[in-house]
Length: 366
Image 1 (cartoon, rainbow, N blue to C red):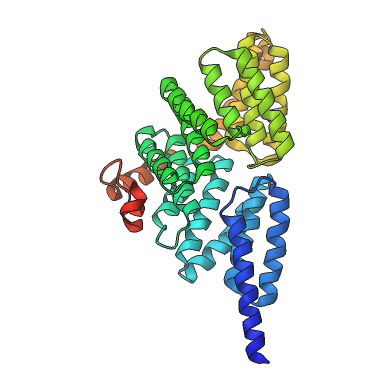
Image 2: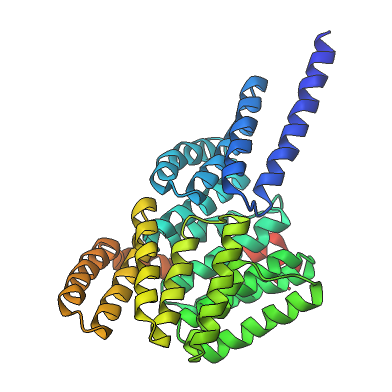
C-alpha cells in the first residue's frame, strides 16, 4: 500500500514537473491565464509536499504577475524564491530566478540591476539548462547590455543567441532574438544595422510561414520612423496594437511602448492631436503599472508635442515632470553599471567569449 502510494506520488510529481516545464519554456501569450495555471500547479505541489516543485510554480506565477502589470508585487515575492534556490544549491532554479528578476528590474527602470541579474542568469547556466534557457538568457543579457549603452558587448551575445537558435532549430525563439537585436540597434542609432537585422527577421518569417507578432511589428514601425516613413509607420503601429489586443499581453510594458511609438509616427506626420491622445494613453499605462523607465520617454514625447503645437506652458510642465522622472530612474545607476561592466570584462576576455558558453561545451557557441 505504501509502495503504491509512493509510486503514485512519484508519477504525480513527474506529471506536475512536465506541466511546469510547459510554463517555463514557452512564451505564454495569455499572462493572466498563465498566472491562474501556475497558482493551480503550486497548490498541487503543496499537496504533494514537494517544495522544489512548489518553488518552480511560485516563480512561474511571479513572472506572470510581472507581465500582467503588478511589478511591485512581483518584486516583493521574488526574494523568497531566490533565497530558497541559493540555500538548496539549485543552479537551474537560480538561473531562472535571476532571469525573472532581471525583467522586474527592467520594468522598474533599474538598468544596473537589470544588467546584474541578466549576467547572473547566463553565468548560472550549466548542462541542465534547456534549449529555451540557453537562447533566452543570452538574449536578455544582450538586451541589458544594449539598454546600458554597450552595443559592442551586446552584439556578440545576440550573435550567440541567433547561432544557437538556428543550430537547435528553435525557429520561434529565433524571431524573438532578431526582433530584440533589431530594436537594440535602432535604439543605439545604428539604423542601417537595424534594417539589416530586421530584414533577416522578415526573411526568416517568410521562410517559416510565420506572421509578425505585435513586438516584431513595433520594431518595424520604429525603423520606419527612423527612415522618415511616418505614414507607413502609423499604419504598422495600428496593426501592431490591434494584434496586441487580439492576442493579449506578453509583458507589462508592451502597450505603453506601442502607443509611444505610434505617437512618434503621428508627430512625424504632423498629426499632433492624434499623437497627444496616443501619448496620454501611454502615460496612463505607465502610472497604472509602475513603468518608470518608459514614463521618462512619455514625458519627453509630451514635451516635444506641446512645443510643436506652441503650447509653451504645457511643454514646460512636461519638461519639469521629465526631469523629475529621469532623476528618479537614474539615481545611483552610474556606479553600479560601471562596476558590473568591469566585472564582465574581467570574466570575459574578449567580446565573443562567455563563461556560460564554455560551461555548455563547444556546441553552445556555434
